[in-house]
Image (tube, rainbow, N blue to C red; front, top):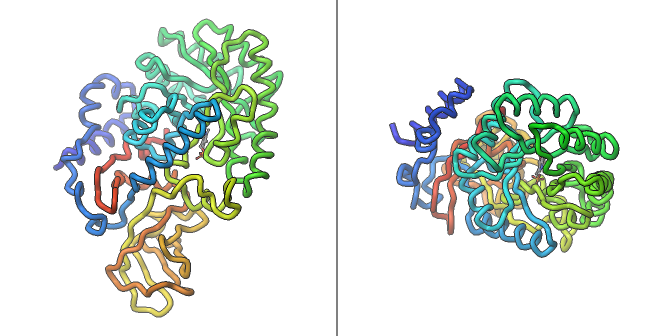
Length: 410
Ligand SMILES: Cc1ncc(COP(=O)(O)O)c(C=O)c1O
């Protein structure tokens, strides 16, 4: 059994217990979840020698994407608080922090726990916790992690947070989650959000830190001008609310929101402090088609860095080939994965274990055992299918990164 197997078993075991017991032995847990690259036989191999399907990230493209995001937001006078729900990989979160991020976001409490175990300690959990069990466990994390900030979107939830913090003997840091209009989560902007912020401020065991407003609907609007208008209009009620919170003397140092599609727009919203970009690190097929400021057809601000390597397993029928990467490796999200370097073929992954290539006007016909590389359809759910990703440079494996938050969706 390799150390990596051991750490995975340990994760599974601790996950199954899913209790505060995981916190009892942080040092041991930490050692078990930090396998060194020496444990991976693949380090140094050419990509061509990897078993497939394999999830690969090109380091030059990844680092370039992180630098583009950081330099743009810095030039615009705001920060980036990367959403790590996208990559679920502590190694990437550390790269983002080292290059200037103000902290990280997580979507789930258990992601936040794992990120903290891996040394990330400025964490904004963007999803409100509502069950008693989660509230208790979130307060255990807050007890250990001074930089852990939680979201609230109802007055009842604020009272529950206050009670859980009191029970844990701590003061919990809170941002008010404001609904941009999509009604997914968040309190209504204006009076309801202001009243909630005031309630948090009055609560003896809570500390108000500011506001969160993520307008998911704005991110994939096609065309830069339309996206800009939608994003600014969408955030306007939240901006007005933020200003009222400031005028009432509330402590609102955070106004976080936005993402990959609006990262170079959000600074135009008054008071806005940081972009919660997630997908920009990988840039998937869903984002490629939205168009950028300089190119109406292709979003080329960032480069696709995340690919799935797959092998042709059957090429004996005309007009098609079958690969080893189906729904379990690619998901069934649309648009389908894009074959790198090919325009004259389509790739579908509707079948569990197999992908289907159909030729229209290909540059070549593939044979069994040939490799194809796919730009992923939608990065977040694809990453969640793999235990590790191969970090490559010039098509050689430079590091193997455990996707430590994979499956941590609680
Ligand atoms: C609350 C929140 N913030 C930020 C993001 C990141 O968005 P993107 O991947 O489009 O950059 C998401 C993605 O769904 C989100 O739910």
